[in-house]
Amino acid sequence: MSDHFTTDQAEREASGARPYGRYLEEFEVGAVYKHWPAKTVTEADDHLFCLVTMNHHPLHINDVYAGASQQGRNVVVGPLVYSLALGMSVSDVSGKAIANLQTQELSHPAPVFHGDTLFVESEVLEKKESRSKPDRGTVRVHTRVFNQDATLVAEFKRLVLVPRREAGAPPAEGDVE
Image (cartoon, rainbow, N blue to C red; front, top):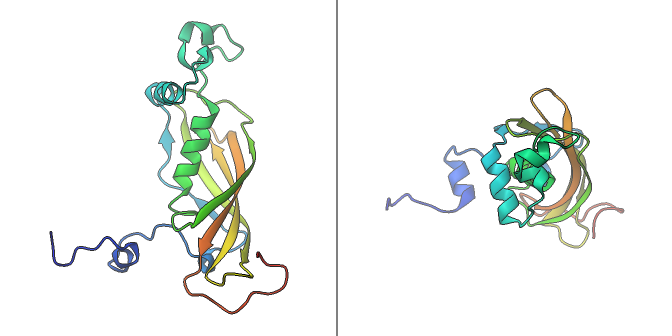
């Protein structure tokens, strides 16, 4: 192992590595992060996720059954779409998170099919400094998932507890406890 080897993420980022996640100060309300890379969902991805999570609904794993459904083909299981979108957003949103506090308003307005490519973006809705712990605060984002045809296929909001780069002065009235 090299004498210069470090496992500390801050030191690795200081060396020129891509920053992973953001500190509270780096979030700006209204900013939209277009997460990269996109992900093409394969039949194998869908089947493995269904089997690992014990969801054996034939709409997801049986071509004959799905062919007779209203969609006419297999539909990717919704929790996989959510999990992929959440994972794709980590490097921009929650890579430095202390905790993921809440997911709200998860919806799947259109189906995802095997072979669809998912593009994910997150908009910063709010950020608040903690009133009781000056080294952290919360960020609320709205994450949207689109397929290759720009069809909205999923969306959700989540609240993330993130550290501050440096503990600041006590926040103003109305901020997070």
